[in-house]
Length: 157
Image (tube, rainbow, N blue to C red; front, side, top):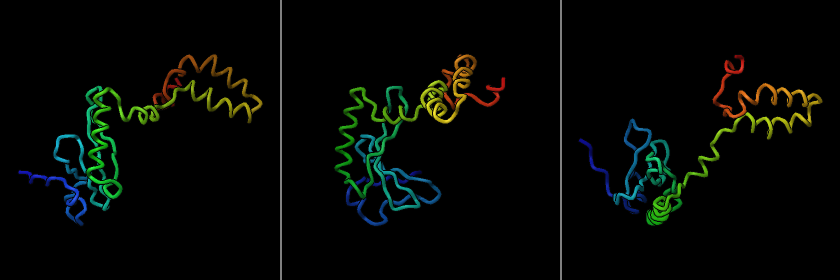
C-alpha cells in the first residue's frame, strides 16, 4: 500500500528536508493536489526542486513543461502561471510547439543548399562538380529525407 503524498504548501516546500526523493528512485513528484496538472519534481542528488505542468497535447500525448524552480518562484506564482498555460492549452495553443519545431531535423536538400554549398563555394574550386552531382544523382533519392533517416548502407546501394 502506498503512503499518501502530503498536501503541497509553500511552508512544506520551504522546510528543509521535508520533501525528499525516496531511496532508489531517480525523481519523485509531489502533486499540487488541485488536479491542475501542477507538480513539484524532487531529485535525490540535489536540493533543487522544480515545478512542472503536465498536460495532454492535441493528439492526446502526455507532455510536461517546466514552470520554474522552487527557489525562484513561489507555489502561488507557479499556480498563476499554470492557470495561464492551461487557458492557452484549452484555446488550442501548444506551449512547446516552438521547441518541437527547433528539434526538427533538416532534410538533405536543406543541408546541401543552405550549409554545405555556401561553404564549398568559398573553399573549393570544384564546387560546381559537387552541385552537379547533387542535382543529377543525389537530390532525387535523398533530397526529401531527414539527415538522421538514411544510413551509409542506403547511400552505398
